[in-house]
Amino acid sequence: MALTDGKIENVTIGNNEVTLCFLQNENSDKFVINQKLDDWTIVFSQPKGKYKKWMLNGNNIKPELIGEVEQFKFSDRINNVELVK
Image (tube, rainbow, N blue to C red):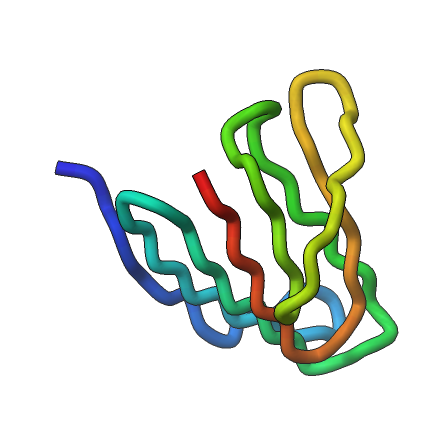
């Protein structure tokens, strides 16, 4: 059985603290990524070609292709990512 939802809270990385929540369903995968500081850049990546549509905070985005992964960067404190299959 695959894990379809979960939460990792208050992980300390240097002087920052990150919380990640995720929910996977048949049509999309959703992530909420919060960080204590907004001067840190987070790189979010997924396998190439896995998703048809990428959204960050309600806006369509185009990920950058790096080898076999697609990725984008963000530095906001609260980030809602939706990836449509």
